[in-house]
Length: 156
Image (cartoon, rainbow, N blue to C red; front, top):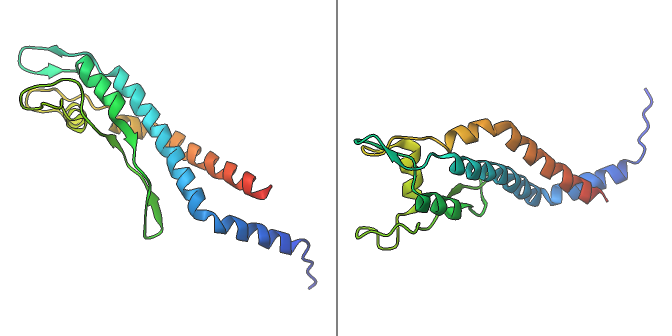
């Protein structure tokens, strides 16, 4: 049986070029997916109801807590371990609601956890988990688009 190999050298060179930048490509893809989720969480924060109370439980967030969540939301630097590139999306810093117990303001991560899971005095209003589930396909598509762009740039 006869076989013909045409342009194998350029194809092999292209594959080697892409493999050399695999770490960069993976980082770009992870950040592209994280940005999609972070944007969705920002929208969800704006949809959390304003503070109200039924006398026993509080529901929603104050304006200071909402702004703190928006300002504190971020994407961490990526981390590589065992061939996996990952990052975290979370809340950092403090909001402007200063109390004696929290002289710097309430920690944004505490407010986010309290709203997401609820407490003995705050009714839960999940906004992170439903957003992540809803945007799963969009996140995969964003990551694929980042990889496609990277490959197109490398092939030039």
